[in-house]
Amino acid sequence: AGGDGEGPSGLGDWRIAEWEDKISSSEDIPLRQELCHVHTRTQEITGKTVLRTAFFFHLDFSLSLRKAGVVKTEEYSLPSYVDRRDYPLPDVAHVRNLSADQKALKEKEKAAWSSLSNDEKLGLYRIKFNESYAEMNRGTNEWKTVIGGALFFMGLTALFIIWEKFYVYGPIPHTFSEDWVAMQTKRMLDMKANPIEGFSAKWDYEKNEWKK
Image (cartoon, rainbow, N blue to C red; front, side, top):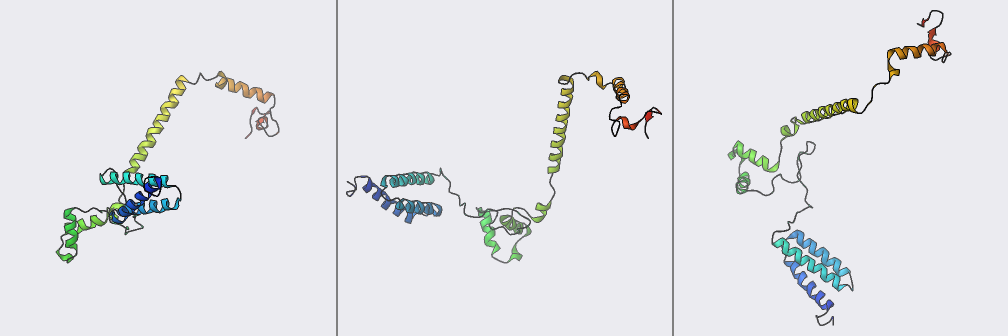
């Protein structure tokens, strides 16, 4: 059944032949790389024609979406643009898709630069770079955000502490009053608590005062 093209094997062989033509005729470089990769992978899966055919139907649907503009192909293998003071020459230009005016300016760039105005030179610079060194070195207002955020959370913490004082904590125990602390200290001295190096050792019992 597989030899006459009616069974799964014949269907898989037909899909392989069709996709070999699509690979060779495709102008989408990333898509051609993907098709070649899947084509090679499916050739390695011997005896699994149904799975191989499912791969090709999936790619057929993917290709239809790309032609309709639903899926955007990105060249992720290319380097990205970034402004860095320690790397003054990026690998790619800041503007990749040039407008008509920018294309005309790039053509004019090939002639003598003495014919270019300052605005045109600046325009060429902006095509290649996003920021100048002066723009990269300029100060920012980020410190205002940091200080404002810190003050906000400090104020929020203070409000939380005040709320706890009034609604969470109970009244201060009477043992913290000055009279109670004085009576407690006198009792500890009368009992000569820790007389060697502790509390009572700092009290002069003859003069009834703290040792100087």
